[in-house]
Amino acid sequence: MKRKKYIVGNWKMFKTADTAYNDFLILQNHLENKSAFTEQDSLLKSAPFHVGICAPFVFLPQLSDLANNIDIYAQNVFWEKEGAFTGEVSVPMLKSVGVTGSLVAHSERRQYFHETNFTAGKKLKALFENELRAIYCVGESLQERENGHVQSVIKTQLEDALSVCKENLQNAQSTLLSIAYEPVWAIGTGKAATVSDAHDVHVLIRETIAKILGTNIAENTRILYGGSVKPSNAKEFLSDHEIDGALVGGASLNPNEFFKLCMESCM
Ligand code: PGA
Image (cartoon, rainbow, N blue to C red; front, side, top):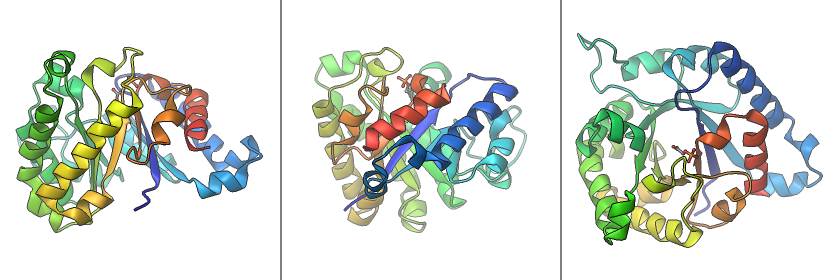
């Protein structure tokens, strides 16, 4: 099955209002005029891609208003609908300002904010109940890789979280779930995984999803690679048929560089 390549920028906790909106408009303008950047327009049409941006909460309403064909994601969300949870943001709140969905359990949230597979499951459930999308992040630490535990770590991350939201996803559209495979040791370090290592983990992820959620959802789930993706290596990753896209941190901050990365990866 051919899934459209999906390239998602994660701005993390960078930018202020002026740079956020300005950079976003530069990127959107590039994407709208992309044929002006290449003489291989027909090639581009035959290899289409779609773009998303994960932005800090405060920028989401305005970015959603500005966005024309770019998906806007939160970087986190809380699972309760409403209540006395000072500082949290709910799925209905995100929905009310027009966002596409949310990242769930990015490794920085697992590391600094003690997110677990179980809390990730509750967030996924809340998103799917409201028909919003999720990019669920999984990945092993360096120590887990060195100890040969990659497969068991990834399987547990998927099984624990997806078992919580299984029914909600099975009753919703089959395309609401994306997975980002981000080896923790590759994030922000400049040291990406090899394409062949990423390929093997992506195969495992799709097999595991098929076992938990069935083959239809597994076939419709986009599995992105993340961790030091940049213009110089994006094409290599995205040419692999098991890699449906990329979650890009550092190289998404500059809109010109991010646009270059999108174009290179799909040519
Ligand atoms: P990086 O970050 O591209 O800067 O390695 C990826 C991510 O954290 O999603």
